[in-house]
Each structure stands twice: as C-alpha cells, then as structure tokens.
Image (cartoon, rainbow, N blue to C red):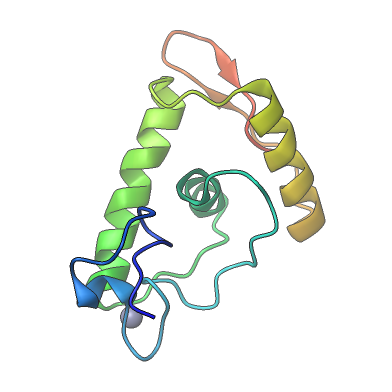
Length: 116
Ligand SMILES: [Zn+2]
C-alpha cells in the first residue's frame, strides 16, 4: 500500500516518502501506535524523547524535518494540545516508555504538558 498516511494523513504523491527497504516512512522500527492522538503529534513527542530512529534515506531526512517543525509549533504554542489529548499522550508514553516527566514551556511561559 503506497500511503503517506504515517506522515501527513493523505495519499502518497511521492512514492519515496514511504521509505526504503530499511524503514517505513523514514522510521526504523518506530514504537507501536495505540492511541487516538494524531500521529504527527505523537511522533514529534517521541522524537523529542529520543524514541525514534530516523533512516538515512530521503524519507527519513524529510520525516525528521517535518517532525522538527511540528515540535517547534507545539513548543511555541502554535500547535494546541488540548488537555484531553495531553492526558492521552501521558497514558500512551507511560505504557510505552516509562521515561520521566518532560514538560514543554512555551516562550511566553505557558507550560504545555505533553508527556509524563
Ligand atoms: Zn529509509
């Protein structure tokens, strides 16, 4: 299936974005997804916590750039994380990683809790 869903949730216009023989959508063995949190947000949080291994292929390079932009929007507050979504991210991360609490603080001082 040639889907770019893992990246932007729309059908693939660029076959390379699906990745190479070593990866899927630029990620090598990414953590399983069992949550209602939008995947691009979840992957951005996982990148922040060093939970992702990016492939060296074009898809991996583009995926890293995309998630950096998403993470930047989360940290700046441009990408809103509703409380319910934050709670869901907490639950997911507790079940999948057990890594200590991480909180993002936006430039204006607001604390955005996206992991626990
Ligand atoms: Zn690859």
